[in-house]
Amino acid sequence: MIRDVVVIGGGPAGLAAAIEAKKNGAEDVLIIERDKRLGGILQQCIHNGFGLHIFKEQLTGPEYANRFIDEVKNYKIDYMLDTMVIKIDKDRNIIALTPNDGIINIKSKAIVLTMGCRERTRGALNIPGNRPSGIFTAGAAQRFINMEGYMVGKKVVVLGSGDIGLIMARRMTLEGAEVKMVLELMPYSTGLKRNIAQCLHDFDIPLYFNHTVVRIHGRKRLEGVTIAEVDSERKPIKETERFVECDTLLLSVGLIPENELTREANIPIDNITSGPIVDESMQTMVEGIFACGNVVHVHDLVDYVTFESRIAGRSAAKFVKGQLSFNDKSFKTKGTYGIRYVVPHRIDPLNVDDSVNFFMRVDNVYKNVYLTVKNNGQIITKVRKAIVTPGEMESVVVKRSILEKLNKGDIEFTLEEIKND
Image (cartoon, rainbow, N blue to C red; front, top):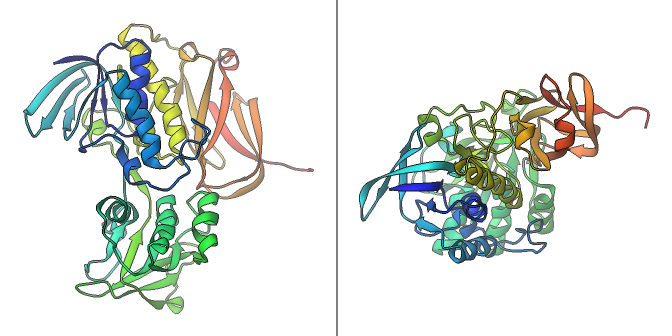
């Protein structure tokens, strides 16, 4: 089987990339999805807040996904469900496994990786104690309640203030559970400010910064957790330990891009984002293999995933048609003081249509700063920010006309304190 563009993953990134590839001239586009339906994680996100940037509307996750699923069908884009890709290589050969056909081999002219991310589990935290039932990742609990129709518990503690944990604190409350608290190891939240307000403050759910769970209690079913405050090195303070009775612990302690296929294909990975290194076209460092969405870096909003995925899909179509240029004038991007990472990692101005939207995250909470972009010490652009936090992704747009004037060196992103103002 030979295809123009194969998109691995049928979530929001994969749907948007496939549609954009088709719109831009890729004749034979195929989506491969391991679930039994398209839509990815949006299927279980029944809360609203999706689509504000793309559609200027408040949509639920399934509503947002269905807009794209309908478009996939209108464009007659092929998709395979319940199909697991088990291997890709640098020559864009794909091996997949299906219940009906067994192992299939696909040769693709271009591949777009959109496998998304997964949650960290208790095993990644090494919390002492037994292994009773009642401990879930926030996303697993969300699926049980919103899609399978099971209530996972009545007395709940949430560890981690990521967006899924915050949303599930509200969801459990609405379903009648008592959410006793949300604990956050860091001195700041890793979720959006709007979710803290709408999911915790509106329901009087306390949020404790600098706190963690230090022990699990219970043998068959969770009976409670011991929590403690942590010091500046994030080590629990023994004197602050206290027992909290609960039958459910939800973990919202970080997301990891699913890049097993990427690594197996020897595609270079960014050690900070855990996603592939990509250029302005969302092309990885392997020619003809693109990546977008949460498999590259974890996004706050699905709208941003869609924006990024449209670039990847459009670029994959250009690659198939031989319209994506390659030359040596490729600039690296890097984050310095206060900026943990920047995506995309490399820029070839000749492949930029009008501008590049650079996405990044900061490493702490900063107030009254400029987010400054430099090249060889010269300021390209700067944006004033009243506050930046690790929980909210930042972005800066730089026009192609500016990028074309750069001669050498990295494109540096940094935070600078606003003085005498």
